[in-house]
Length: 232
Length: 214
Image 1 (cartoon, rainbow over the protein chains, first blue to last red):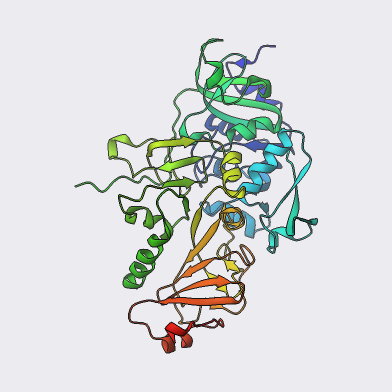
Image 2: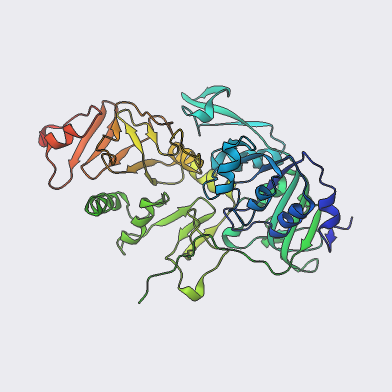
């Protein structure tokens, strides 16, 4: 099976209206820039998106909001985006807020074939409403379900033609669990290297999870809050 | 006001002990990082996948792939590690983080915390706060004692949606420090210049006053 693709066009074209997509990244760090832009270009609609955040107004998943392509957003924090607020208040956008650790674990579980698990996160809060409660060792937990989506959009630093992936610094964030939770996983990377060029010990995501690999150019890597030391 | 904030921060930094792994919440708690004494060696954790946050980078060392949970550019200190979000919350939920210091909107006398949502205002989301309050070994909340209308934020019951139920161990405000015990909420320190009577007048919650503070 040939995994390396030289254009995202054909793969993204196959994504139908109404699909669910899990998207890696934390804020604007480690987001699959090219996949998001290609999806915006395609105009695919009624999407359910699972991602920790929803970008900012002009960048990242915010681009899909601009285009009104998202029907439902599942995220832990969406406070950086005015468009989000507007569409939510207009009733154009459905929102499910999930605690960050629960979101990560739901993706991990989904990708690992675990349909549900128990966690104490959210017990006694709105998050627990309507969920099964169970006691273990005298402590209360709620049941949360694993997530498997139609597609997974991943950003990595390096890949080989088998789809083995290496991430860089905190741009790793949700990407490794996202990679496991898609029926079809598309990884875009900064550098494509030859098979065998990545030490087996260094691989973060084994290629088995990845169906398509694309080497992107000219990554913008926008910074949300540029903070530097106050040296004189 | 800024004087009050200084009191809160300088008291909060005393909760940090040598050798701890600590998570500092976004906003006011993040400011504590710079106040940790040089001889207190700690690993600061960031939910997005870094244990061992360093100082902010010099302008020419900024790396968009290296940020903290507040989305600020940071550095990694010597001995730091990177990991994915599931691993990050395994650390948190699994009780491996010694201490989390978080901001608060309301704290109740039973140790409930509300700090993520004000109904009627735009929802932003809880981020990692609900996981942290359940998982970290010790939860310290720092906040102003009263809101801008002079109303107590230290309540009998929280009126805002909860982040966690009976999760707070220590509450540090600009007026006092409280500990949450089996017997209830207990005053352990008055901030400089605050009398017990002033504290009582500014506090809706019922609290235990130990003999030495009466």
